[in-house]
Image (tube, rainbow, N blue to C red; front, side, top):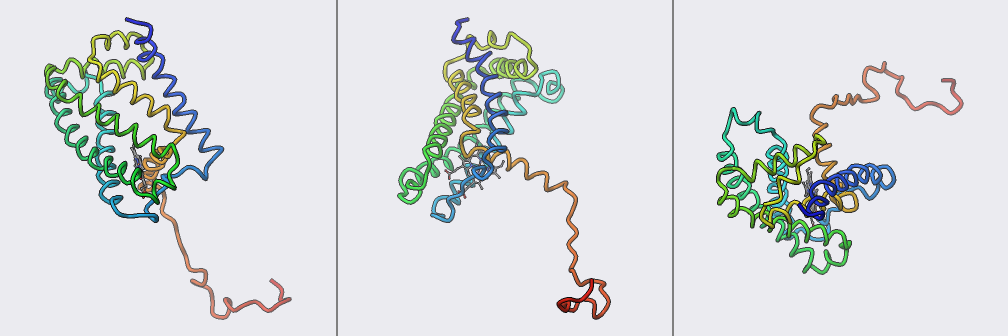
Length: 244
Ligand code: HEM
């Protein structure tokens, strides 16, 4: 195992995770007015409706799929589904979501590059993040035929074990990825880089998107008219100088 491989798969993940968590906290604390999705809907609706909706449906499915797929231990899911079947399910469902996401993201990118109003009001990071997501998605889609070749689920198991060792601080994860095909390796490194860039871009709105789920369980607000149950005459405007 080369030193570079060891760096990217056992040290770089922690650098990215630390920047992601501490950077998001610092940005929220120091710069709350810049914490937003920076909607451009008022400038031009055009392809935004299709682009943004397709992109978000796809990316949220992919996000949940990666999270659950990588971090659920084999000992838990093996009672429900075998590794080869899980891989097949991931390839087909991830492929469909990736395709939807790809169409949406391409529309968003085209709009941001070629609509003069949107281009003029875009920050460099707005463009950079869309391009990086587009490359990441394309490489992810390019790994699908490779995954169909390893239909025994071996690659998926190695990736899951690597991710689970990382989050539980167990060593030895990087060794499992030595023989992985290069598109997977680039996909992993770029994926971690997105976490690294997260706090410095509009991606911080993803925290708020998930945070808004708290509205489902928050206590309801009691809104009462000021004059309710107040005896007649008590709600008249007070005369200047009158005692309280
Ligand atoms: C958690 C739920 C999420 C919510 C509620 C949400 C909401 C939004 C909103 C309101 C916008 C502005 C759209 C407009 O211009 O009007 C936006 C844009 C964007 N979102 Fe999300 N988002 C979520 C998750 C994500 C995720 C997981 C990603 C990617 C990792 C993402 C990436 C983006 C990007 C790149 C843009 C900018 C698109 C453009 O160039 O116009 N979002 N999001």
